[in-house]
Image (cartoon, rainbow, N blue to C red):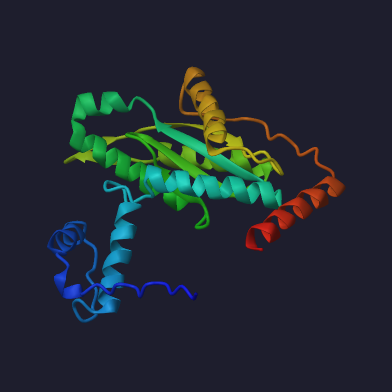
Length: 245
């Protein structure tokens, strides 16, 4: 006896209540679709805009923590398969509480936005910058060689220290940041949590040593031989074939 799958249920776009979603997009400054309202293309554009909005930090427009964690998991998997070096930097604004206490939270928001723009413009377009906490940021740098990692971190630190942020009319403020970094272990199936913890330990070390500095964990050189790499990929390919069989 032949079993037929039930026909998919089509949703009538006219029955959807989208006022709140559209209002949310307008408040965020997102461009609304140009397509005919309630058409399939229009609905798709609204969904895409909502997905984009949910992945961004409202204050800085950087990637938010949830999207950062997803990207970090993808990078861990990529490094395990490709063996390419990848660096994770954790960055924290020094003495940020004093900024809020002295100048107010509005000034603190200006400082966060200024630091976010500077960091984003200092690294490569392929690098991912995220705001993961109040005054804490994270940077994923794929394909970052071990001999350039510290130079990148120092460049970010220096660019931020050169900022002059106007927190009130005629009142300029300078801030500094501390950075900690760790390379993902190559050819090893690690975890985003362990990678983040290693970078965080270096961030704590930078703060303990006086702040306004960058501390990186030495990259652990891969001890996997070419033959072992081939066996690893053979196993991965076999697993993939079995999963798709």
